[in-house]
Image 1 (spheres, one colour):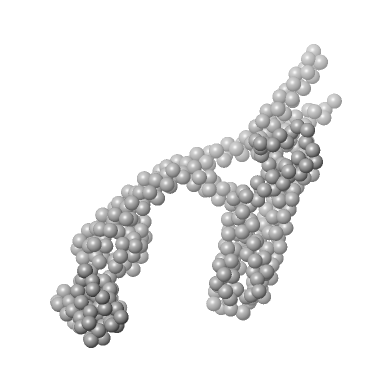
Image 2 (cartoon, rainbow, N blue to C red):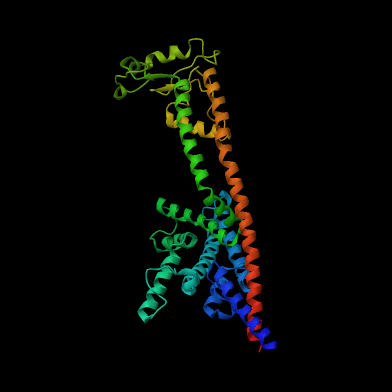
Length: 396
């Protein structure tokens, strides 16, 4: 009986090992089969693997926070332009060195099961030669480099070395300013250590159809409403004529025949025909050839009739996006009754268009959250099974 029980225990242990190996989606080996390279990788990649991995992730998070804070604070006038440059440079050097060490360590110790691909066209498992092993490691490093989060890591440290290698390290050129701006990508490094950011990115990937539908309807609506608002609110167009040149309204080089609008020499009379919103003073058309707002107005009080804020459909598209998203900056507003009616329809349409995909995105967020919780529970069960099977295998 004892032999039968022992045989059953051994078969259960073997079955548990097999099931554990199959259930591990990331391909990591069992605890007793891990090499030193596997353990170093997991300490760098998985904060929950060990205490060292947890504190390493905390240190990287603190450096990311410090780097991004310095990037923001150094733009304050009292803190920039030579006053504390040595402080910001030292912080940048420390952070970049730490990020570089982390990046190089990860790319060097990344094991095949984490960076490689078992479905490769090459048969890595049988009769491997030294050349095959070298190619396997090389392909694993290439796959590691092109992963999105690893590209973010590279983009986080690359600007520093490009600036260092350039002739002018002071950032005086436009090129260097753009390169330094790329340091903001360090914020995306948080996604590797933040469960919330990972959950959000997974939700956005799952919701790509809903987001695509939102973008499509938004583009169509912006084109339609912008076109309508343009023709309603564009005002009156005045162009340069020889008579306007004599009045000093425009330059002789601007004289041309137009198929729409009136001569600029008539603009002052139009702006003061009694329909303007500032009848207490006389307005003048000071902006040369342009679309002028109707009814004539002078919002800044300089005595010049205002140019139309809706002078083209692309310019009107800015107002349309701000209105449809219910932001409403107030920098561009319709002046006519017809324009206000169009604006009201645009507001209501924007609310409906934005609300439709929100339910889909919210549902996907719940799915991803439940999936994340289930994976945590599953991983914990696998770790417990691994420990139990290890203990049973060591028991004589």
